Length: 355
Image (cartoon, rainbow, N blue to C red; front, side, top):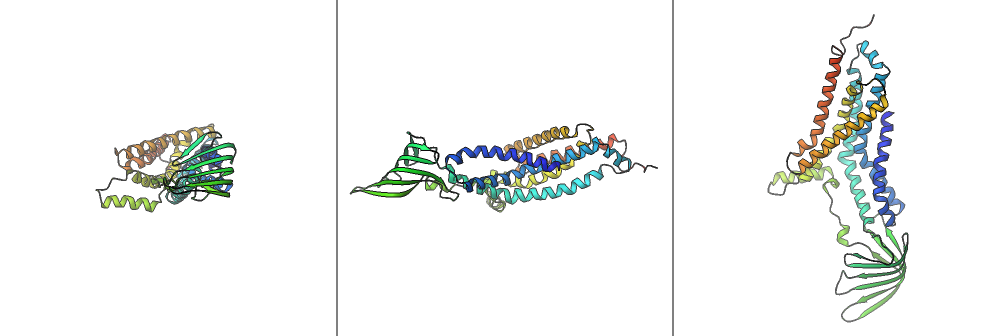
């Protein structure tokens, strides 16, 4: 229950931050509700890679700290059930959560990021057209006399992508559209004239409806980043460099691959570290759990970010840089467990049965 509450709270924070980040751009581009739904779904899936370990950590800390606060851990210890009686259930749950995190990191998160970037690319090319000002988009220049949301009036557009045949467009009204497909943003113009010019003649064509792309064809074919590639694609890139060391080293691909392999271990290590840590507190279980969760999460991801930057700079190997937070977390959990055993005066499980 505590983990579910933590997952909901942290997911709302992650998703809300990203929605505020993209919301203004999507609304200005006239994005349809389907596109907003795609963005929301992709952001939720991508954030689970980070929120799931945090929620599991908070759940274990809150649950075990509550047991310690109610003296139930003392009762377990008196009955001869030491630290292992708490570690084994957490270990089983941690393996399940780590398996879910592995599925997210290795498959679902890259898919969500690719779909998210594809959806955003169709809307990001829609300019923030301002009434009374010229807007340049590569070889195109646009001017609108008035704008109300996605509706524009008195539109002028100049297209010089083909210098030998420039095009000018005049229209009474138009609507900014940002489809969820790969066509990108576009202007749907109504009731206007299309002027074509060449060396020999000029042509004027009246139209009732005309669609004007707001992006260059080259910009629509965005190049995927390492984080957008699937795990098999990352493996192929790294294996290709190992077969031919003369190629530039794909440091970003190596780092991204090691990150996907290292992050699924975080829930298990968080849980095993949280058990002895929670036993140190007897009062204020919930507040203690929140503070410890924040400290552990900030420390873990700070070390992860530092290791990532060092690996990208070539100062350490990607494996060492990305697995170092897991190693530090495992050492911290082992030291806390050893301290808990020593504080009891004898190993857990060696107490006699009460008469």
